[in-house]
Image (cartoon, rainbow, N blue to C red; front, side):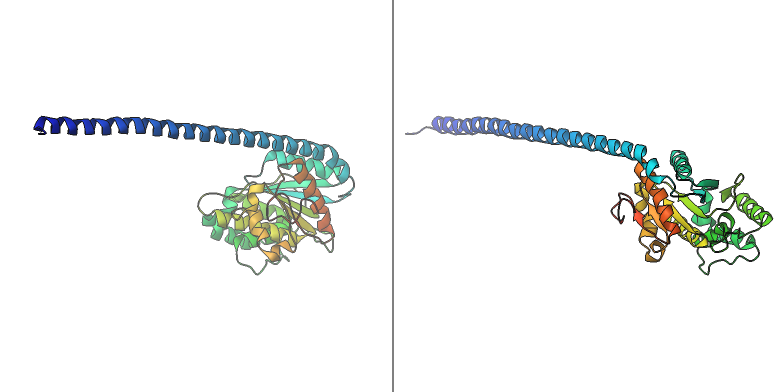
Length: 308
């Protein structure tokens, strides 16, 4: 006869066996999982290492190619802007190094820089757009007509274009010296530009900007610079809008221009002016503007080609 004690011992043995099985099973499973995770971690570490090596190789190649462009580019530009005059317009985020390099290449190409106009943060500030419109209409020189568009970028381009560019048909200034001084003073007093020093009207213009806009109103600020540059082009013999690659996306001035077929039909853009190659292309694009050609150049996905 099976006693109660036997039942208790049997049940205890079963539970003990289950416990031992769970421990042994979990230990085996843990070792398997840990081994798998360790292998996966090793694979990921190798992938990261390979990607870093590839990135370093590409960076070295780009640096080498850009160095080549910096050495050979000036030779290719000789005479491209022979006896041509160029005015520089810079936005607040334009890099001084880009400006200085472009200025030097203009001289290498046989051209001369007549001055620089620096725009301020207020120029493209959406909250200052009504004030900018008012200043532009009050400062318009006699005989100069503003474009019919009502956005602040186009209107400001209509005014400033008449001040910094000569008439492409007559090669004569579009505003008298005293009118230009009064207009620049009014724009400076309004906080929209820095008063230029010895700026004379030129045949061509390069508008230098930085990367993509950010923060509240980024799209509006980018649109103001884009439309301003487009109107500058219309005001003289030609213009190029040049900036960093980031400026070519939807929140950058170049991106706004490249999304507008009316703008791309006349205005050229360069999206890698931070490189030697991009600076050389900026001069070549400006040369093509003299022939009525326009194009969108650089490394961004919405560029037409790398060079003209």
